[in-house]
Image 1 (spheres, rainbow, N blue to C red):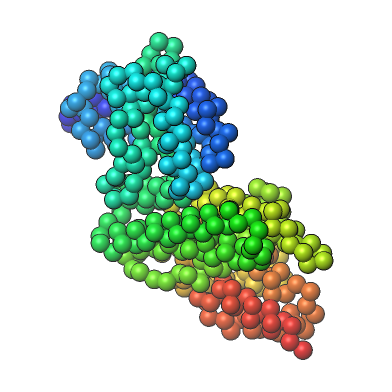
Image 2 (image 1 turned 90 degrees about the horizontal axis):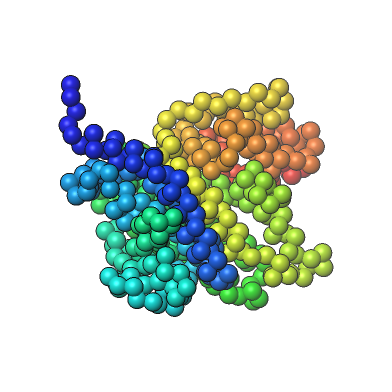
Amino acid sequence: MEKINVFDYIEKACAVLDNNLVGFTHAAAKLTEYLNNTFGDSDATVGVTSRIKTRDSLKEKILRNNLYKEYPAERLVYEMHDIIGVRIECRFLKDERYLYNAIREVFKTDVGGGYYSPENKKAVKLKLDTLQPEKQKNGFEIYRIDGNVIYAGESYNFELQIKSLVNSFWSEIEHKLVYKNIRFNADSLMKDMLNSIYENLTSIDHQLNLIFERSTGNAVKDQQSQLKKMLVVALNEVYTAIVKSSTDITVSITEYSEAIVTYLLTASSYAQRASGESLTHMIKSAVGSDGDEDENSLNYSDLFFRLMEWMRSIDYRTICIGEKIDVTFDMPHGIQRDVADIFLTNINEDFYLNTFFHIFFSLERGNDKQDFADYIRYYCNRILNGKTQEQIYRTLAALTEVPAHKLPLEQTLMQLEATANEN
């Protein structure tokens, strides 16, 4: 059966993008290099990145916005305002306004049509006659500026965004949970939950700002506690929404978020690879042997940003809450095998334990088998390390009595540690 004309239009537009991808890529790279050289040295700037729309994104946008009714297929990619996307990423929400003002200071030569260029760089221009930040459909504000760059004689449109790490993280979450998730049902409850996520992230931004500005005045242990609390809030808010969108049931997973954050800060394979040591070890290294605390030896906002970047990279569409987990543990029979069998027996029988490992596997970077083995080693080390054989037997006996939904909780681990220490 013959398809309607729009599909022929889509294929022609995608072919134009494919045939000119080198030009778009070079233009984006030169633009990114210029912006990084101009604004990258600012203390507020975290980095400058760019992307070209993919074929799939282009197809979706053509249909979603009826673009096939507005432009010839041969010119579409050159007419779209955001075929190239550039982002200046900054630390805090307040830094967005600072960088926007810095841009206006540089792009102040009027070149007509509401566009402005740097005095010595007429090939790059930004449309600065519109009110910023813009109001999005979701009600939140964003610094989003249309631009144009001339490269090798060709004109390329681009969209420049200025985003704090909190806003970058939020937009990725919203994009993956709503925009890219055709199963998502945006009912009023889910909208309220997504708004709650954003509100909590803005609160986290404020707390991070306080920590960042107070290089002295907070004890290291207090900053560590604040860092942990902020991570729990961010992780809990995001995954509560995912559980809701997958099951249409609202449940509390706060205790499981706390357990996962404890693992992330002490034993995560990601943290180990990123820094060569656990985050907790890094924190402890800031405390001298005489008890004095060097609060300048750690940047807690950077630790949090690193973990937020990590969470932002996750493809939340692949997290299938409620589906069975197929994972094995190949270690020969022994203590770790016994502990693993307790988890494996219940992993697809208990909703909360199953949900815990879906979240855990989405956050870790190995395959599920490797990550499960890492977790079992961590678990055994927590409850059995340094204990006598008798204490180990007593602890394993206590472990078999723990309800499945309580197995991963921090409170359970602490109780089992205490059991192992009993005489």
